[in-house]
Image (cartoon, rainbow, N blue to C red):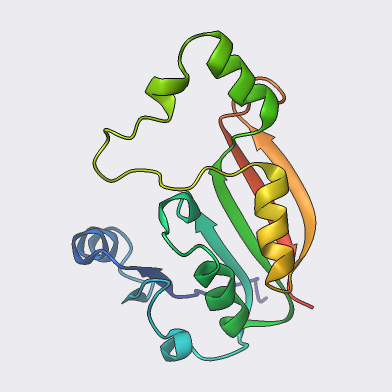
Length: 156
């Protein structure tokens, strides 16, 4: 009697130290030292059903590179799932009214977030890069003050 065995897809990260830890923790999963600015053809082209990017796009200076990277390795009809901190109008207003706007968007933090996304801005970016946004989920806290968001987009 056979059982379902899920496919093991490669994982990518630009951090050598992070990959060492990941390989020790999950030796059965193939890991590649690869970032969104690298050539994704080492992973194949059009072979993947899903690309997941968790809390990355807010750190990328040229954010269009991420959906372009995903598009090159996704099959037609494949999905890109992105998570990023949520920065919608009501959340930003609440930060301003509470006096926490400067602390939240501080320019004094070395590294960190360099892009701040709302549902609309991230949806627009994905649409400009040829994806159709098919889902949105706000996560953490209360509606419209979410900590993060998940956008699901489909490659045509």
